[in-house]
Length: 89
Image 1 (cartoon, rainbow, N blue to C red):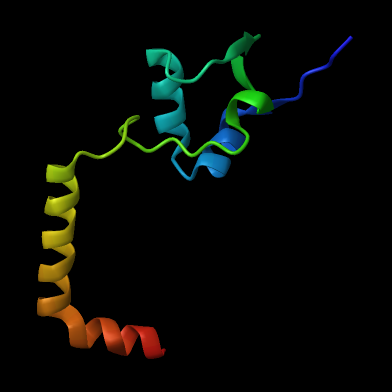
Image 2: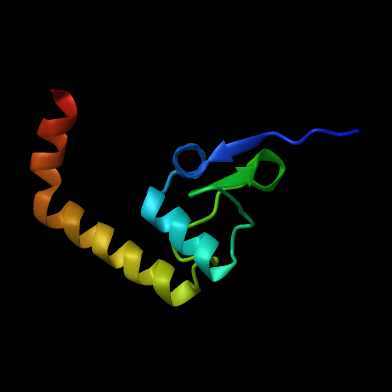
């Protein structure tokens, strides 16, 4: 008989690099399979291991990537010197 290992919402959030709230929302939407044990949810390690689910729950579109690139470029142009100083400390 195979035994599965389960992790908590907090552990899943840490593995995926997102907040616990984001994990709960994904569970509620059915994007992440979870079992309710009493008052808490648990997630099978098999469903999480090696998986990074982004906050949107889907890959970014090219328009979204371009918007991010423009924002980063603008930030570097406006705050480049400050960012360099912060990096040296």
